[in-house]
Length: 90
Image (cartoon, rainbow, N blue to C red; front, side):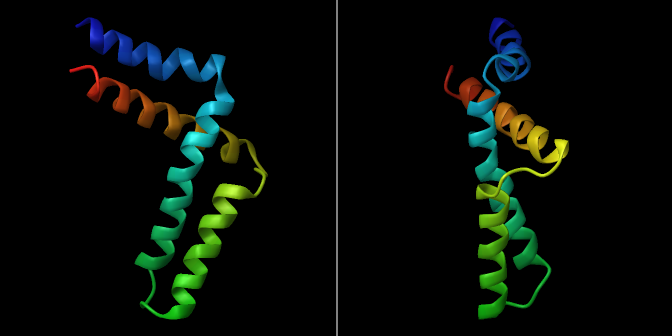
């Protein structure tokens, strides 16, 4: 039970204290998801893979332009890091 409460605290409290770390960690997942959606919706050609690479770069390395672009990587990073932490506590 204590590990489950620790997981919730890790996901909720830590991003409030250190959001920059989770923004960087979650940005990779958001970039991979952006590239995957480009590949999933198109035929596999060289142009499609170039578009997917550009989508990854734009999602990962360009500065955020809205509040959603800031909050989404922090939330994704916090959940991914929390689940990784919980998996390693067995």
